[in-house]
Figure 1 (spheres, helix red, strand yellow):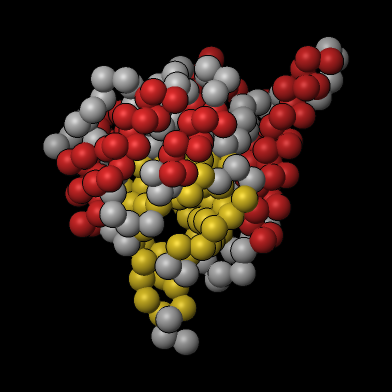
Figure 2 (cartoon, rainbow, N blue to C red):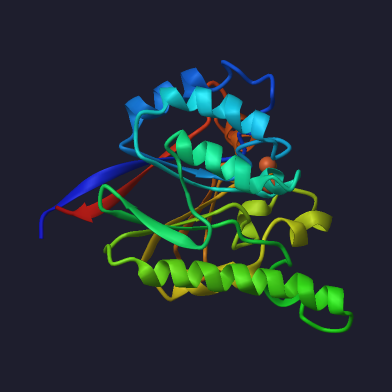
Length: 245
Ligand SMILES: [Fe+2]
Ligand SMILES: [Fe+2]
């Protein structure tokens, strides 16, 4: 079957503040010119305040392509993520939290994710109740990702996360904080579905590219990271996804 290519702009960690008015419009205009759809991998706001979301909503008028997003830990900081979500939804973003959407034939499954660490050193559910609760949160986020991926019927899937599913794209950060940057538990569902690309943020000082153990490309599109790796370029990646015509 003949296919077409959809250009997916990916970025994360905008950390929009109450004084960010005008800071993102030029970036969003560039994204709208360079891509067909966009994904934003969390930390849209700095403190998770509705006032910050309202500033971002005004900036988003410059983003003229279909866009899906997940919230990040910063968007939860003030306990007002419901309001933040509502404001950004009204501004045209499709906010995903364990659910999925289809944009121009590309299936996108989105979840915030959680920490716990990677590989053999990942935190296990053992000992204190609070440790078990911490691990439970990571397991629940992985189950939400699995359910979202299972809902999609498109041939090409994008997994959109805030936390990383692999250690590779966190390298560059102090190793002491790796367990707070992501969880291998998020990698498990990605290997069970035809995921073409994984996009995440959160690790501002990590690496921009890595691969899961099943060789699925993973992109850390954190804005400060992209500014550092690609100086002089606007801080987003354009990833091409082939879809059936
Ligand atoms: Fe961030
Ligand atoms: Fe974050």
